[in-house]
Length: 171
Image 1 (cartoon, one colour):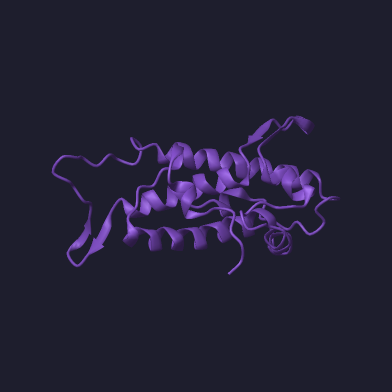
Image 2 (spheres, helix red, strand yellow):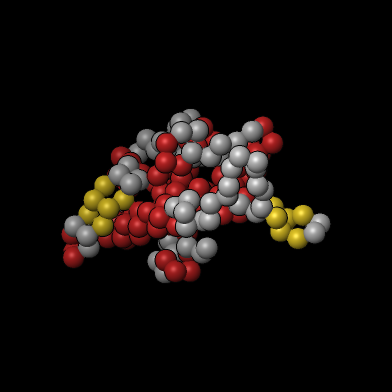
């Protein structure tokens, strides 16, 4: 399996905390496998994706300075484009968090979809849980990274990402 930017441990604390047990860890790993690749392929295109993934170290950080330029957080104000990216890892965490929390909010059962309710707790709706805000932050970083790469095509000649963000970022 290819190196990954995001690891399960990245959801152990902070804004993207996903409490899990041993049974949920496999499900979360499946989400990481599916959505990290999905979004990176659409962000970078196949050729740049393959080069980027091949450059990752064991911690999921690229070694090439050209890739670090868009991997890390940055702000860009050139060409009338004012945007801020939290970096690829934070972008992926936001998008993965959204998909995982949204999809695990309910469970399919033989009698239809159900949501769990503990004796001493109450489920929040998705808006109250603020997953939409986190998703939007991921989208903002996605767009900023892609604008940066597109603007610097001489540095990234293999870039072939999907520039129609509405087709890329489905919910």
